[in-house]
Length: 82
Image (cartoon, rainbow, N blue to C red):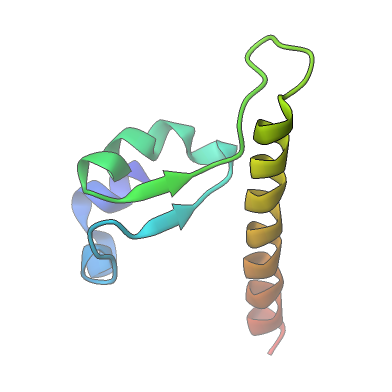
């Protein structure tokens, strides 16, 4: 993702506006800095970082992000099967 944003592959930056929210999974953690530098907001499920469990607020936020991603992935699956 970093490479795509920095090289503006397929003019992706013309699709995105400043302050757009990108819902990503933990695999994009290395790209968060580039997204923020471009004025984009990236939301991603939290990491435990050595803790045994999330706080209630972190768990609820993580669930919300996962639900949003599930809807997007379900739509992508339908498009691919079309």
